[in-house]
Image (cartoon, rainbow, N blue to C red):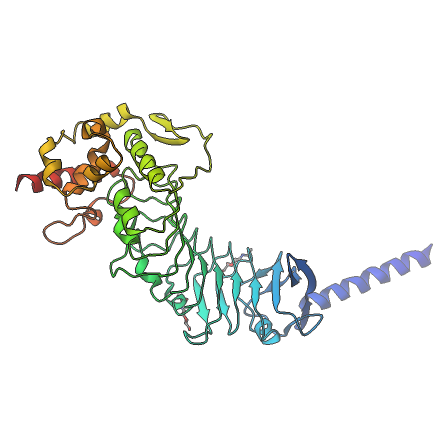
Length: 404
Ligand SMILES: *[C@@H]1O[C@H](CO)[C@@H](O)[C@H](O)[C@H]1NC(C)=O
Ligand SMILES: *[C@@H]1O[C@H](CO)[C@@H](O)[C@H](O)[C@H]1NC(C)=O
């Protein structure tokens, strides 16, 4: 009996000592295990804890051929230099949800997946001439300054969705992606953007998919001109914004490759939406609806599976500020709205109040309207959700222009 207790005690003590030793040990080796992922094999590290202050950490693979590395259930404040030294031929690296505050893109890396971290810094060890990166997935991070990325000229897929600190003055300037001439997919959903600009008319010649869904894109003045230089654009996602108007005629004219446009979750007046959908159909452009069974908010009706502002609702907002414009203004302005009406086969009388915003904006010279001192109306309009005020400003401007 005594003997058993003694043995247990010794075991316990020994165990405690071992535990103490291992948790304070300076040297720690993590070894990854090969796992099959689709058609590649990935070497997986699990339960890694790494902070900058740690020393003597070693990362190892079961064989020297490993080119794809992933981390799971790990916490790292940055990509360990020890890891990059151990895997000089790394082609893909996956470190999602690991509390990273920075990442390094080493030479030769092709794909980096680092969603759901705290990344605000990206250090790029590739130059424009040597770059090998093809895919960079950094959604749900804290990126603000992305100037280090533009040298990744071969990058094909870039996701920055969910980086709420990305807009500058609530605006995404598409010129920030200048030089990324290989970019095919650019994902900027849920970045908190209230407006879009492309001041230098930067072209992303390979861009096929642009995702701008779940932002706060404005009820007025989303100028489709910003997309015009993207001559390969096929898919445009604008769902879940606050758009009340869109110059669809100009859009399809500027972007003849367009095949799909996502529009649900906006604030288009129903009559206008009907015309827009008709126009897209005629142009052979799909308007997919992800959630056709969604229940529309109060004051919204449903049109072909899309919620839109009920016409009486729209009138209620529009009537105090939008007087009917006499038909003569349509005749004198080079109005895209007029063309829409003609080309979609609808009489202007049929357009009614709901297309007033299109008409007024077109009459104001097309979005973004400039005031005489050169400031964009969009920047004058109060930021946030005050589309009503923005609309008011637009109408006042329109009326001023029409009178002079
Ligand atoms: C995540 O990183 C921050 C510093 O960037 C640190 O303060 C925090 O404790 C970390 N969280 C975890 C769960 O490690
Ligand atoms: C850009 O890269 C440099 C080093 O190449 C680094 O010092 C800097 O912090 C990086 N900036 C951002 C915002 O990632």
